[in-house]
Length: 125
Image (cartoon, rainbow, N blue to C red):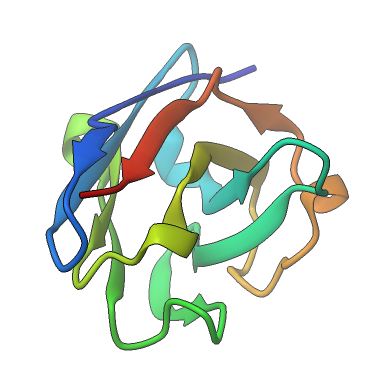
């Protein structure tokens, strides 16, 4: 199985940017679709972005489309989520997730098998 670990969260002002990272270990990350989700207390985990095991066209939630970019570097076993023009409503714990041989069209948290521990993003002035 693959182990995932997120980093890069923190406090950022509205309009700012953050780059979240997802480090994979244990198995070849290139065989996994990568998804990013976020969650706030009292709400379900929400899809943010996903990219298939072989790359391809990424998919984004409407709430982040145009402000987020998901990418991966399989040689480094790393995934990334670049978030720009951050808004207070982007405040959440962000999780990366992996699905073996996924296409990147998996939008529900139950479609992913492996999860990191999350990294907190707070957007506030």
